[in-house]
Image 1: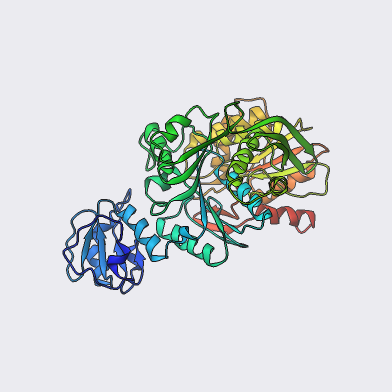
Image 2: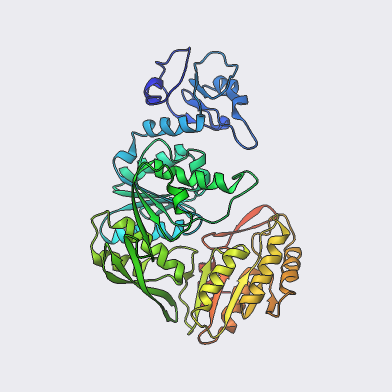
Length: 484
């Protein structure tokens, strides 16, 4: 594709030849290939403008920059923001795949992953093949592609959308994180639907957001880039989220003024199944069961239905989709032979642990058992808080390893015990995670709920910088089959 065609729709200046053929778009100088356009990105630790000449020497046919660079031999295109430029160029390079499938973007502090899977479950029950891009990875059919970020770089977003369109997907759901929006990873196209779940303080400081206001402004960007905005009207911050919006706005929630409402919420509980029932009111009127526990699942399901009603789905598709949805590592039930419930969840800090334990306590278990560890090379205060939370909220805490990284697991456990010591909670220490899981299953009694917290969708354990395979579902199966 010609360079001038890739730049269509962008404001730029280029004193050089624009009629050059571009073979690819590259933003990592180590991966430059002959004939590519090299995009210089300003990162938190590295400014790749410094590698512009190196990229040209390695075969780049053009350089895209946002501040002056000294480059000889190839044209330099200057733009205001190279991240935005890369998004526009990537969309053109891959043939604008978002014009061929309907794309839903989800932003919010919590619930993005679960809601995206609920949307996919409903749509696929209706025969609408749907791809996902988010925290657990990129899903295209039965293939799951691991990604490093909730929202990948714009080049990868467009590449995945192209693969989805080519494989027959008619819809795609993207978790549009605040950082992803800030860095223009989902720029270059218009979302059919933008969804807002909720807003609370998070991702402030470090290399993320400078202030809470900036965090909100980044989420606000989605509603200037979609045709229809679907908003949780119960969240007190929703007005700030949609300020200056350019889309049509629809609402959902429990409040009477919501376009799609929930009422009649009640818990559903039996061994191996913890869910919730509620009735849809307003734009739709019928009852649904959700195969994920807790009040928060009602909001996620309501959001999913508010999106899916814009597709060709039936009432039965919605009922079936919500009653069978499974989200890997998010309050995920794992079948066991006993009369108890075993769940895997990604809760890996005090807040998420408190949320899951509070939710599970509502189901009035015989005992609530929480197995968890804490990540190495992270703030020690997080470990104290996790220990104190589990000690206060669980009947039994089983302390074990998580991703200890470059720390000694016993040092991490000692920090967790500092928090536990502030409570009256019972606990045991079993450093080996497989043995800890086995212990939980061996002591399980009728009516217990056991949550294996921390790993969630991860299928590895990082020790001394090495990632070892560890999928808790496989471990549970091995224990049941008595191979562990």
